[in-house]
Length: 345
Image (cartoon, rainbow, N blue to C red; front, side, top):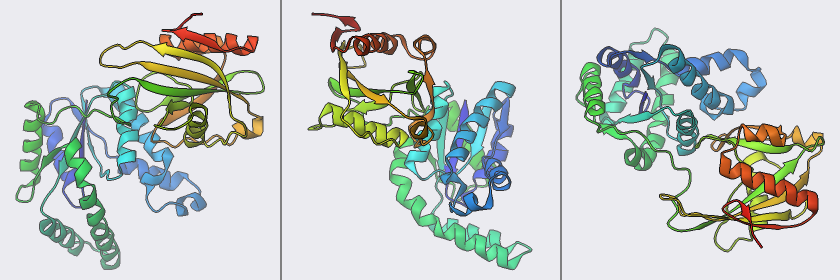
């Protein structure tokens, strides 16, 4: 399990986390700031200059997930993570990546009164030995209070909130530990898109390399690999939806509308509603195009070209059955109609 302590800069996340590891048995502190500092040393200056915050580096977000998972695998127990996250897509990416590894996240937000928060930032800067550096840090923290306040809408809907305006770090940690023990800080469920209220129509696209392998992507927000694609928006042509999803997910703009390979009706299995699943043939990518594949991070953690046999180890059974019939349809130059993964008609 991970206890993620969120909050504005100066809210007391790190001091609370240090106290919390003494209250939660078998717990370990992991500060993602250390990963940011590592990247600052690792990356070329040109790349560092391109981003104002290391959180904007997809590499940092992936490494936070990988490091947290590796730490838990090594030491077990509970990981206490103090880190500000005010961009919802970054929260989705990181928490989704942890959820895909079956790691439960309890999300806690420290939300002191803004006047008290600003006073804390000022007092902390006043105690620094480097006045110029302290002033830059003070201005930097103050500039990020408003974005944090703007994010409170989705943060408070998602996380357990602790008003630590009048609490010491030890008292704050005690409040957090009690909330976790009582189940008030519940596991954070990651939902990248609104939960469906009825049957959905989804379009996937098979893209092939020069060895006739096809592309699979690894979503951050659910276990198992997947084809590029997604839900068709209302009023959107399915093939165009597949093209849109390919562009959004991996940065490839398809020149031609992909050819339909199969239609599969997926039966409702509560809590899912099922619906129609379409697979299209997006054609072959030249090696130069494959080299330009980009991942947005918020949705996808990785990609690879695989054979049909290799896909059997990566895809959930329902998607693997769909894939096998799509490949047969491609070989025969036809379109197949499936019901729950079985050809009909």
